[in-house]
Amino acid sequence: MNLFMTFMVYSVIGWLWETVYCLVKYKRFVFCGVLLGPYCPVYGCSIAAVLLLTKGIQNSNHLFLLYLFIVLIVTFIEYVGSWILEKLFNMKLWDYSNLPLNIQGRVALPISLFWGVGGLVLIKLIDPAIQDFLRELRAVTGNKLVFILVLLFAADLLSTFSFTLSAKKDFMPLVDSSDNQKPNLKELRFKHIFVADKPSTNGQKILEWLGSKPAKFKYYNLKRIIKNHPNIKIIKK
Image 1 (tube, rainbow, N blue to C red):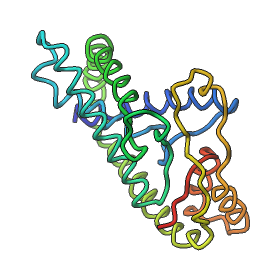
Image 2: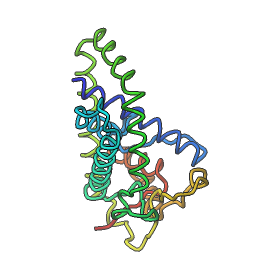
Image 3: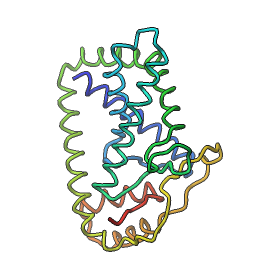
Image 4: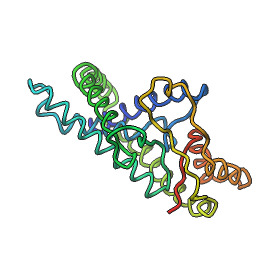
């Protein structure tokens, strides 16, 4: 139960991080993420996995070993998250292909090293306060809040997967495989944070198509994802 609550808290924190980043980049509010709720599971999964798998060395003197474990765990989860989005939904939300030592644009060493530093700061300085908060919260709410959040998250996850996969069958014939838009291309330049990326041709085409469709939930979430990620890459495979 505590692991799930840790996952949820850091998923929300990750969503806030992405929201602030997009607010700076696009000069408007962007509801980040694929799911309907205000959380980014890739952050929650990464941090929960780091906390779980490094438990035995978190309080040791092997700081560099802890750092390496964090880098490996976060890199693996980010790669898997990108792979799932591409294979299930034919979407790419980020691309590291302009960064050195990247793997298929899904992960890149500079990004992984950055998250390694962030993981160390989190373990040593932030997570103890988060765990104290969760203990106090559970003392007040018991398991009721956990069960409610599990149900809400499961419903969100299942409905998003179901409706997006259903909508994908409808819009895939519109996708132009020659569109070489790079999704949320990352670069090692500070000014990149403040410059919006070029909108995706396929994304704009699908948005126009969605505008002519009836108000169905399966189309609503797809429209939200594309509007909030204007440079999304839709892959025709």
